Image (cartoon, rainbow, N blue to C red; front, side, top):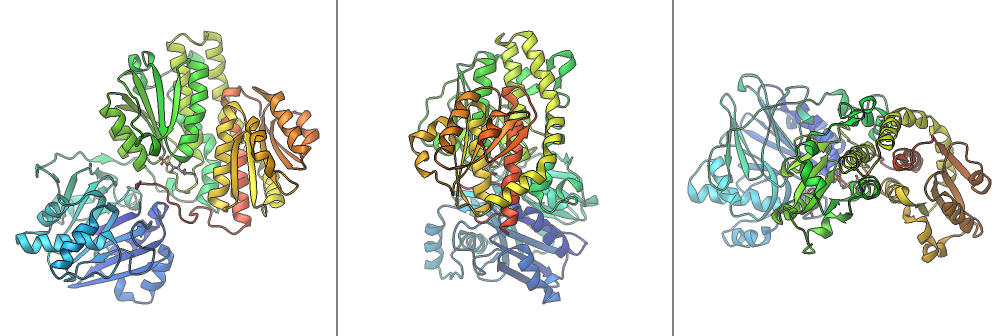
Length: 618
Ligand code: F6R
C-alpha cells in the first residue's frame, strides 16, 4: 500500500510533495516522511502519524523545506510497526542514497543477513532500508551509476515495489521502478520539471502529460534531458506513450463537504448517470459497450461467469450474480479473489472471469486475473481507475466512470459497479434472447430514472441522521436482506464497521433463524431491507420474528409501505423501482447512516484506522 511522491525541477519542491502526500493519504496514513535536497544537503523529516503531523515537524525547521528536489511517502505499515524510525524515506548507510517505497520485499531477511555480513547496520525494521542498502552495495561493487545499481539490485529482489531513489552524488536525477505497485510520472514543459507519484492526483495542477510505468519497468528521470524507461530484467529501452490526464483538480477536492465520503455519497446521481452515459440509449433500446461488443462470442458462448473481487467490490459481484442469472441466464460464481488465487480453481477457456475493482490495484484481484488468464479464461475488468494495473492486465473491460473516490469507504464505486454490471446483464440477456424485448425496454427506461431517484432519496439525510443519533452507541448491529438485497445487507454492515468500528454483520434475512437470532435483544438494532418486490412477505415474517424478540427494527421499505411501518421502530422509504435495481437505492440510506454514526462518534470518516484505499499487498 503506501503512497509515494516526488518532484525535481525549478519550483520549491516542498509544497508539491506535501500536498501530493495529502492526496495520497487514501493509500495509507500510519506515518509520513519527506526528503528535501538543497545545496549539498539531504534533509529527512519523518514521523508516525499523518501528513499533518509531518508538517508540524517541518514547520519548526524552515531549512527542512528548502530545495527543488524532494521525495515523500505516506505509509501503510507492512514490515515494522508504524513509528518514527520505520517511517520512510530511508537512507543508505553512507547517507548518500534516499528511497521511498510502496510494496513488500519478501526476501528482505536473506538480503539483510548478507548485508550485515558485509558490515551494514540497520536502524529500522523495514524491508525498505534493506533495499536502499542493497542498491548502495551494488553501486559500490559494480562501480556503476545509480540507475544501473537500482536495476541490478531489483533483479535480486522478490516482492512488489514502486520506488523512487535519490542519490546525493547525482543531483539532477531521480530513479523510479515498479513491480506490482503503480507509478505515474508527470512531465513538465521542456523537461524542466518532473513529478513522481503513486497516481496522477499530486501533479494535476502542474501538468496533464503523464507516463504510467508498467510492471518490471524503471525510469531514469533527468532534468533537462527527459525520462528514459527500460525493462528491469533485459535492459531493453521502452518506447513510452505519454497520456493526457482527464482528471481535474475539483474532482479530487472536497467541494464544500465536510468529508470526501459525504461528497462521494452525494455524487452518486451524477456518477451513475456518467456510468451509463453514451452506453445506454434507452429510447432506441440499445446498450453499447465496446468491451462486450468486441468480444460478444466469448460472453454468449461462456459456460459460466466467475466474478473475482474483494470487499465492497465483491459485494457488487454478488449483486451481479443475481443480475446475470436472472436476466441473462448465465451461471455465475462469485469468489473472494484472495481465496480463488490459492485454491487451484477449475477454470477453462469456456469461462469468462470478471474482475471488479475500484482502484484497479488490489493485489489479490490482480493475482486472480493472472491465474485465470494462465488457464485460458477470457478476463474482463470492471474498474474505476483509468489506466490502473487491473485495467491493463485484463483482456477487455468497462470503466465505471465514477470519478476519483478518495474516502476509504467505498460508496459511489459500489453503485457505479452495479450500474455497469446491470448494463452487462441486460445486454447479454438481450443477445442471448433470454429477455423479451418489452421487458428489456422497461428495464432501460427504469434504469434511466435511477439517478433522479437517488437524488430524491438523498433528501432523507436528516431522517437518517436522527436514526443515527438513536443507535450510535450500539455495540452490535445486524443487517438483513434477501435476493438482490442480501449483498446490500453485507455492504451496509461493512460500511458501518469500517468507519465507526461498531461490530456489524450482514445476513440473508432467512438465515437469521439459523443462529444470529440468538443475539437479538432490546439492545440490538437490526437494519432490514424490505422493499415491496421479490420476497417481501417472507421478509415481513422475518421482521415479525425479530419483533417478538424485542429487537429494534429499522426497515428500508418502498414508499407507501404500510405493513412494515406498523411493526418497525423506524422506516426509511425508497422510491419504487424494478427489483433488480433496488440495490442502487437501498444502499444509499445505509451509506448515510454509517457516515452519520461515524461522525457522531468522532471517528475519522475518510481515513479509518488500519485501512487504506488500495490494498496492493496480500
Ligand atoms: C470498503 C472498501 C474495500 C474495497 C476492497 C477492494 O469500503 O473500500 O473493501 O472494496 O479493498 O478494493 P478495490 O475495489 O479497489 O479492488
